[in-house]
Image 1 (tube, one colour):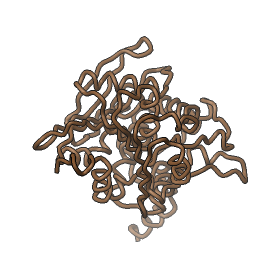
Image 2 (cartoon, rainbow, N blue to C red):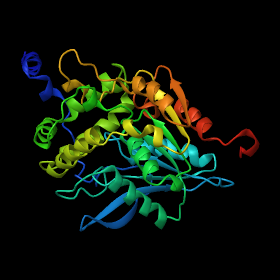
Image 3 (tube, rainbow, N blue to C red):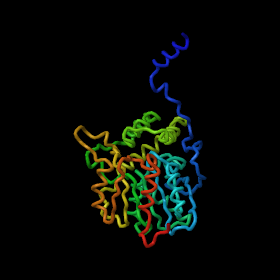
Image 4 (cartoon, one colour):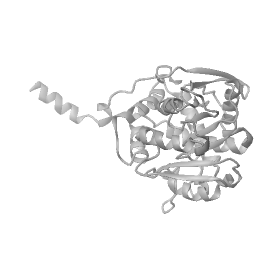
Amino acid sequence: MIRYAAMLACLALPSAALAQATAPLGQDLEDFDYGAPVKWFEAEAQGAPVRMAWLDFAPAGKARDETIVLLHGKNFCAATWVDTARALAAKGWRVIVPDQVGFCKSSKPAGFQYSFAQLAGLTRDLLAEAGVERPVLVGHSTGGMLALHWALLWPDGVSRLVLVNPLGLNDPIAEGAPYAPLTQLLAEEAKTDADSIRAYQQRVYYGGDWQPGYQRWVDMLAGQYATGDGASVRQAQARLSDMIQTQPTAHQLDEVRVPVTLLIGQEDLTTFRGNTAPKGVKIGTVPQAAEVAVAQLPDATLVRLEGLGHSPMVQDPEVFQRVLVEALAPPSGDRQD
């Protein structure tokens, strides 16, 4: 009888109370294991010291001439790229994977004015210290926006781009999504927790599907918010959202001077700030934006990943790694198999 009463009491609790408590991981993910050795790059930005966490994977066997830099998205970290980085290193590439300032294990300076130019400049300085020139940039989501801004700023310093479901190919504000001031973005961040992160990613990234392996990335993000009051994380995330909404690359695609390959999961429903658009206004999804962008970019190839969503490297690593290697391979006469 006691056991039965306890079961009824549990059923009466709200679902959030039954959810497993989120483990705090530190606002700089001090307690989250990336599964690879973490290095540090020290710099100064906007008059304050900052440091960037980064991973460095040495090539196996004969090294290729190119170094690949993997750029993470807003809801991901360098850790999300580890399996991909190992697969590329096994094919002979040196692979570098940074955490951008404002994200993950890297610094989150108070009052920082985030811009893609600032992030690209810091990462370029990191690469210079690592002895890397003219890398191949592989950018996912917000990392794809960063790669495009980088190529627009310093086209001679980039070999080529591979963009995986990038943001920035369209301009949600120009399409009708209202501008969200920082106060609104901070209010939204105050509501972010493990449940909201999972619900969003399941609906938008994975077409309603959910696999156990996806939970690691929810726990990673939520573990930052769960540390203390998560103030530095929420501030950084709100300011980064403002950067994304105000600095699209959609209006400069015809100025990109390096070759671009678009790897686009076709089930991606991501429309940054699209949920705030007035009734009847539809903001283009990433796959829809890519169909337009491929015609605007001077030298672009579109590879459609059927059945995959916003995060193909998480959803189906084997397929994604195979397609990425094919996209990165040089012409047949120059291949190093």
